[in-house]
Image 1 (cartoon, rainbow, N blue to C red):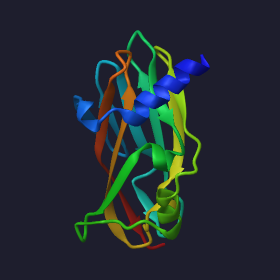
Image 2: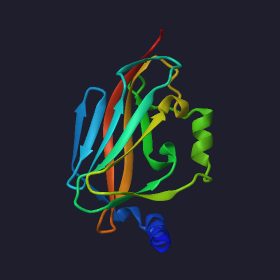
Image 3: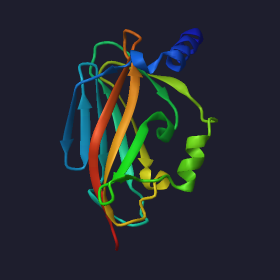
Image 4: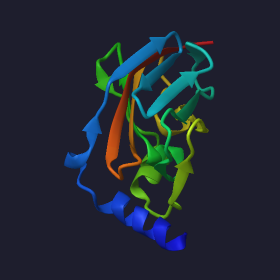
Length: 171
């Protein structure tokens, strides 16, 4: 089992992104967005659509295996595991990282492991995006989240969730 995990980690580390496959559809519903294909569904959701400046903004992420075979993800800290970008819709500019966000992005000391998601099972985690991105200004924002998983054919499949919207207001 240990050898399989090492081999899978090697595959995860070395496969060129050009081999990854873009897949199908996005479904947006209020404060959540879902990406679905035959093998998985990926969902991102916020507890609300409006937040007060300098309060936590908790993003919940979940991956569900829709296939009949195991799939694998590289598990790390959520901020390193997924690719996030947040757009300030008022200025049409990318939201900068906080000092903590820059620190985490520059580090490579985080634990990585291969996590198996069996058929019908899900993997979920939460992240306070206000800790990583400077959301201290009143505005309307849009989040884009990308990631990838290793399917049962040992090929990377990329996914991209677009335009999960929320606003930040003064108290």
